[in-house]
Amino acid sequence: MGRGARSVWRMTRLFDNLDARVWGADVAHDYDRATAEMSAPDVIGPTVDFLLEHAAGGRVAEFAIGTGRVALPLTAAGAEVHGIELSEAMVAELRRKPGGSGLDVVIGDMATTRLPGEFALVYLVFNTITNLLAQDQQAACFENAARHLGTKGSFVVETFVPLLRRLTAGDNFKPFDVSPEHVGIDEIDTVEQQLVSHHYDFFEGRAKYSQSLHRYVWPSELDLMAAHAGLRRTERWADWSRAPFTEESTSHVSVWVKG
Image 1 (cartoon, rainbow, N blue to C red):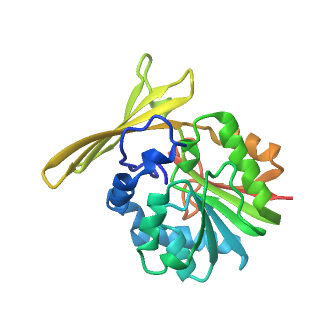
Image 2: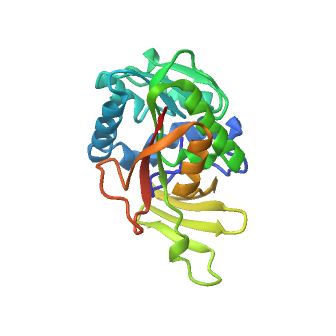
């Protein structure tokens, strides 16, 4: 699950991202089409290569495994992938795919649910850390990742960088995607650190409005959560291809190591 790497997560009206009901059958059925650009080879290839390197042949856990966009190609590349997923409907879509029936997936939330065993890598992609709508929930997710990791194990997170630098005085709205198929506009609450993504989709002659709610989080804030969980940051890149992370970056891929 997730909002999209500055692309789009089209979904039904959302008030509590931790409520499994909002990730129901309608959303799950449309998920792969709505996020098709994130399954393109130029996106998945570098993602899988990066994660394989950090797994170093060990067991892998994906928090919010969804419909298997990353887990299935990572498994095909030789990794032993296990997953946590809040939505049974998303897992049902995963099970319908080749190789999906063989993945070990536990139904539960990524902040508290525990998979058995120890892992060399835990990863959380596609902005999904922002689906946790309070700071303590996001911190609990880091603590849960740390509990899953063995010594020297890695926690990898991919998420967006808030667009606050691009806001003008008195402005709380910022477009992040404008195309013939989709218009996306972020509504940003700088007091409560909340963000509503408004989506206008145009598909097969139909227009659809939806929105999703997020808690945006700064990279330095994630570093502090990691430190409290016993993890230390070792890498931060602008993307999976290891482009340098700069003040102009709109997303980041960060790695924290246990021990």
